[in-house]
Length: 160
Image (cartoon, rainbow, N blue to C red; front, side, top):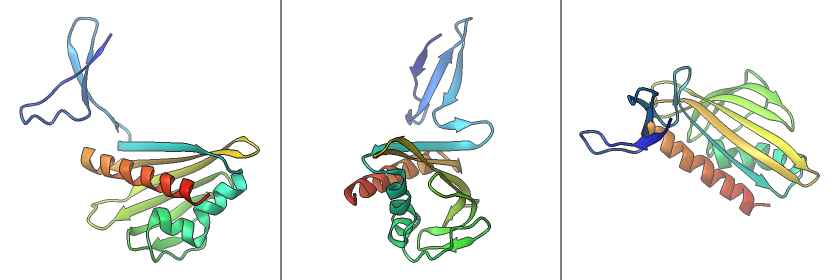
């Protein structure tokens, strides 16, 4: 089986592929879209910091603002709602040094997305920070959030 990019009548071929089936037919699959959660994106970087330092970079007041928006003030506990210049949501899971799971709804979005942040210790001073976001409205929002998470990880790297 193989894959091939294709365009549609409007010419916007971004992220669309066809999968060849055994009979030579082509099934359409859109990159980043699943049946269960719709559009999603994942971005990760391994940084030269301990898991403790990575957690601090993400969860300090400055750290939270870097990825959730200015003006956020929240206790990191399950059930805590937050508000920022970028949007609103609620923390669902807080596992210190390991994981955050929260909802996030930016202004103009019809429904909230789900964001999961994981910290994975590779070695004493090497930690992978992973952002995964699902329930995104469409391909354009997916691409915008990909750029957002890449910029967040770039800023975190600069603050080391």
